[in-house]
Length: 89
Length: 366
Image 1 (cartoon, rainbow over the protein chains, first blue to last red):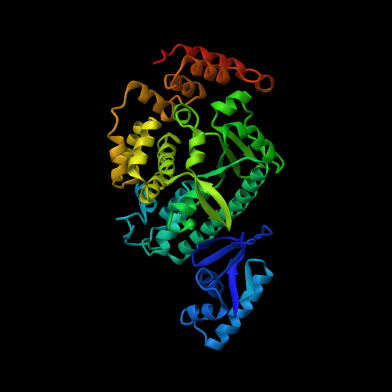
Image 2: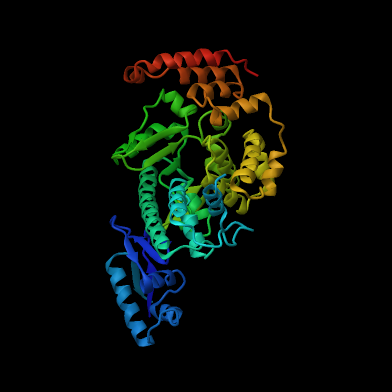
């Protein structure tokens, strides 16, 4: 199981269904929209990818397999941008 | 009050208990909308306007929704940029041994509002101890900040001044406060006590400190009642939010007495009712009832929001609140005799200060 969390030092706001995120290093904010914004908000409660998929199943109109792939890909992308941390539990 | 003004006040109330219903029955026309958007932008109410639209309390056209979303997003980007700066500045101050407490902006957004995106702000305010003001100015100078207005004397900065306002490359202000405001009601506050009572809060995973709930509520009252001659809806909303937080009533009432600010709360009670249009919280009514304003109180409040709000007027009004002849003399000397570099820099202004000194001396101390 991989634990997922927002990176320490990240700053963010929700604006009209979108999430603007300022990475801990760097001054260029990221704008998360649609499923990516929902994923970000789910990170406040869920601690691993499987739980996030459970949370978002139904909120995002996609087959579960696609949802799992999409979330895993988004998490990888957010990790690369320094705003999310993953850790093998 | 114009219909645009009434709608803006309704936006400023949105989300408070008893104020969650519809603000309008139909989308405003384009002219009204432009006025509302501009007023909300100027009045730092864009976050609340966005909340009202998100909550379906204010019908809008698709174009109006899109305009608002773009403006709100810019304010959010500004807020998190300021918060990054706040984290770096407070860390740098801490490394230099300067303790700090966050005032207003980010602290209010995270501690008072249901969602920090409701509270937009455009600068950072940090409280430091009086003796630390010069060192704090030096520390932030390393980040490129310069004082917007030269200080008076170092002794004035340490003991009587509000603090220092700094800017970097024409960017947002950084206010390093020694106390919560200049003049009478600032002099009645013991800043070291604010530090002793400060509470922790977390921003971006970093520990910061903010005023205690009681100090914060009274600070919001002072700021909204005395900060601007034209009361600001956003400041009054801060009061309403701060009163919603868990505040110890006895502690708050004794703080009102200690800071001799019942007359300030009395003005806030009036403004909450007449400008924001909300029922003033019972606690604030109780605090306001503890005073019958005297001429001295009226003079002190007028120095902030009356026609003559000059530095000299504030100095004059403050004198009778200082406890001893020694304090009054030290205050007058520090305020009236600028340090040598200021005399050179501002030339003729020195004479103005001399006039202030004469005017101040004519007031009978009580």
